[in-house]
Amino acid sequence: MNSRYLDAYLRKDLAKKLVLLSGPRQAGKTTLAKRLAGREGIYLNWDIRSHQRTIRQAGWPKDAPLVVLDELHKYLRWKNFLKGLCDEFGNRPPLLVTGSARLETLRHGGDALTGRYYSYRLHPVDLSESRLFLDGKTPEQRLSHLLMTGGFPEALIRPSDAERLRNDRFDQVLNEDLRDIHRNSSIRGLKLLIELLRERTGGQLSYARLADDIGVSPATVKSWLGLLEQLFVIFLVYPYSKGLARSLRKEPKFYFYDCAASYNGEGAALENAVACSLLKWAHLERDAHGRQTELRYFRDKEKREVDFVVVQGRRPLWCIEAKTGREQLSPSLAYLHERLKPAASFQLVRGLGASFEMRGVKILPLVPWLDSLNRI
Image (cartoon, rainbow, N blue to C red):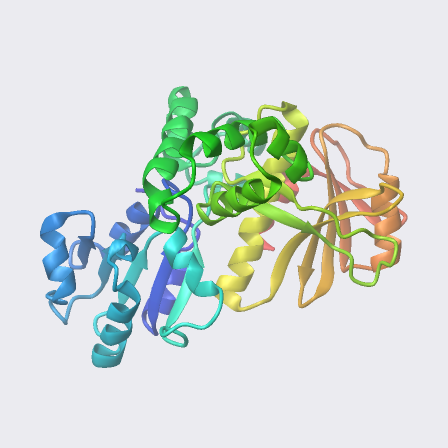
């Protein structure tokens, strides 16, 4: 089994506190957890009926090196149950709890478990991590493979089944995971919404237009988009406007966690892959190091737009524009670099030969930069 980018961080923090691991369905949470548990650890899954009694009674050996509780959020009393374990047993044995949307809700607002846990989000494989799965391929070949299959491990190693696995994953999320957070939503409506989003990946959300296309209200569309975000199907990127009086607080842009899900061309797929890599890096900065890191984009009244603004500590760290083949400096990126004065601005160009700099903006080959992102 391939190691994952979170392995060392999880091992370190499991020695200190309870650890919660969330993320998209089929991103590899269970595989990672079982590998960490090893032969001596205990793996218990709430979906397995014979495991439920052991979980309720905390009936595992207290000298085990690690206990994994998978899908525990389906237990109605799971938060109070974990609080009781922490208060009674401390960190003996270490506990790793895996799941999806329900675990992620602990990040928002106070909770009985506050101060008792660390939390991580496991992302699909990106270009930087793909070398562990696609040994022998060049970075450019690995990027092409990701844009064809997406970064979910099973699809990555079985490319001929990638679209079928993607459709199955979307169906499982809507037919199973959705019930955990909202039982009354229209599965048919959400499926149609996903299809429409796949045609418009990387665009600004228009609630009114989507509502008109589906035949529901804009408020319903907004609610459904929130559910898809909670379920790790899409993520929203909001505009950056601090200190920019001429910028507009418009609707967010959206991307899929599956970087190959889009229908709307090579440029959109490449932008989605860059967005996935940047969000993965930002989440790791926050989860492992506590750095307040966010992914934003920029657009102003003059319709100047920059794909991404990475914000750390409430200050712009990077301004980034991703291109499929243009070497000319983006006027919007040059403008934003001069206005915000971030630590660095990058125009990342797929297929670019030599790097160069213009007006303070670094124009770089996209593939090597993405491939080294996890080492920055």
